[in-house]
Amino acid sequence: MNVLVWHAHGAWTTSFVHGRHRYLLPMGCWGGGRMGRDWPQNAVEIPADRVRQEPVDVVVLQQPDQIELADRLLGGRRVPMIYVEHNTPKGNVPCTRHPIAERDDIRLVHVTHFNDLMWDSGRAPTTVIEHGIVDPGERYTGELARAGVVINEPVRRGRVTGTDLLPAFAATVPLDIFGMGLDGLDDRGGRIQPHGDLPTQRLHDELAKRRVYLHTTRWTSLGLSLIEAMHLGMPIVALATTEALRAVSPDAGLISTDVDELTDGLEWLVREPESARRIGKQARQYALANYGLTKFLRDWDELLMEVSS
View (tube, rainbow, N blue to C red):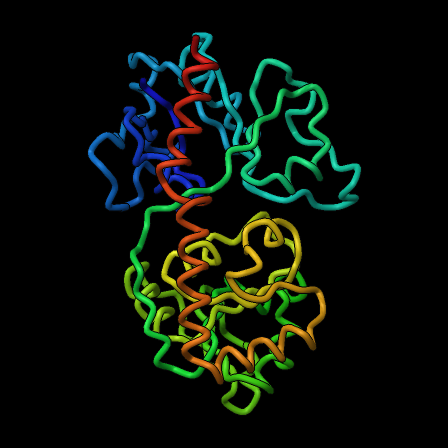
């Protein structure tokens, strides 16, 4: 099939374009194409003014303004549309209405069951297709008695990313923070060490050296770095918020809303490397079974065939 899709969410799109279809990525003022990503050849950059000449079978939207944009690029041609919602709702959450809630002609895909539960999707027909990632391989060594944390813009986002909780964890175990926008992060006398935004391969190598992965985000759809850490074979300590409760199985680490309980678990995993390794292997097996690329692409194949038939 020929699928028109924008590179709006890099990690998700990386998985999506590993399927068996031809993925058309608009370029120019209406899209950035591949944005330099090392993707399969079937992820094709196409000038926006050539889209209407392509045999597009399905359009995958990820932002409200892409609905009108797709109509314009297709020259008014009617093509089935799917809208992927990556984010948790904001504002008055139980009552937050989705931007396409009045559209019963566009399938709304939530990437987590939590999102499906919390958004008011109105008349839009909904489906949940959970995340799947390209397996980075089992790289865990756990050689460093430290916790790895991936947070983008922790200073700006504050309580959303659980930045206020970092000092409590750092008092127990030193933390290595990876991600964008780390300037101004309180290092707590060297107990919180920022490492910046590393290329994916290097990030995976560095994370895998840490004894445990710590997930502090209060409000997010599902941080893919958490799923990546599990694929690497890392044991997990995580806040039991949003979809993390479903993503982290009981034998993959410790998940709780009790910060004292989490700090105790973090300290124990760092102190017991063999236990950490065993739990990390269980985390990897769970992630492969539930967030592997094969399941993700199979679920998408079924939906693409359904909406285009």
